[in-house]
Length: 608
Image (cartoon, rainbow, N blue to C red):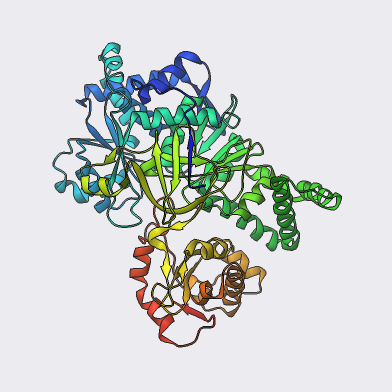
């Protein structure tokens, strides 16, 4: 199959805007809790009516402060209840939010605010203001600057007390479906971020159709904790979908507190990027290893994967496997479920490939991961696995109202209700992004006979060796990254005689692993990179990855770096995707060192 088209379930409404989703929710179920906020050791519910009342009051504050319909307002803050409150207050005031990642550098902040034409800035705390202060002379359009931690919401609410309800109703209903709802800048894994113009219809029609398609996972009583950044399109779309579907949402801006938060909130649904699921798995493995029970955990993981695979494939599950599964459910799986709060039934994964191993493993725990696929330009999801038909290893079928096709060169192309309007003030890039109305994603993939999509790599990331062999890095990188002590991995070898890899170590997982393997747990990353035991472990993982590809595609040499790749170093995006171009540039010397010596057998090289 080269093309699939799924008709919209919900008739389009060209007059509807995002604000309507909240207004309808507050009208239809005014007393349903759609948010919970921390309150002592527990949580305090906020109903749909209460939330809309707060939204209207804050929108009045923006009006009183001089915000006009269509004004672009920059917003930099962590993932909290206040984030979504501000989001909808700006919609109700007729303004356009321009979100900025709270980890953005001053230069990135300056670019996004200046390119978008923002006239005001909302920031959460002093750190964000400090970034703004460094570049404010280059931002003459910015007038008002508000700080959430200095009581901006309360002050604006008080300032707007005299604004009539009718003015907010007028502003809320100004935008039609085709109008600009937000400008979200790409995370910048390659080059300068481009502003994606997303319309009200992109969010409204996609929310309404996704809610129908995923209604089993979004039924009444569903609750979730948002902890990935709402500045990214993935969480931003889901936060809007949750309001439309009436899902009760809590927030946790600090992922170090996530286990405690999940334990008290007890969500039924989670939204995460694959790295989070990897951390859960690796932490469990490291903990059991430290307790001398590593062999039991690995056996339990293997049983979970095999049990789930057989279920999906419709194969017979023998008595032996059933008994092992039941035993491990009591000994291992139930404890991991408790780590996630005990009630998680579904999880949505996106932004990067999850990999079949983790998909099967979590399904074995009783957590059905709905892996999906999309980009900023597609308002997040273009496809997602259905709760009633999960095919691990794929990113599911197209959502209703979305068409997907595979071009002759293998590129995944998308059109439909979710596709963005244009790149802000960049007609050349917009023209280049489309092929006869189809958005060119830049990703490579395939469709099976049922219309389920599998992503195999990025066009720009395909490595062509000196021998002419095409290599998709993800096929090798994903299984290597599955090792608990591996932080990140980048496969290299373009126009080189063989494939090699740059490896970083995970500073959180490393100490416990070192201790259980007879090494000094206080070793620095630089010292660990030179450890024969560590290098042997990485070699073992690479040997495993090499079994998945031909010899021409296999990794012959690798380098363990004595440093991390993070957002702060400029090597990861806010959604934790690697910035391949920056890594290849910044570690060009290390790459040259790999190829400076002859030979084609895998070598352990460590760079401090």
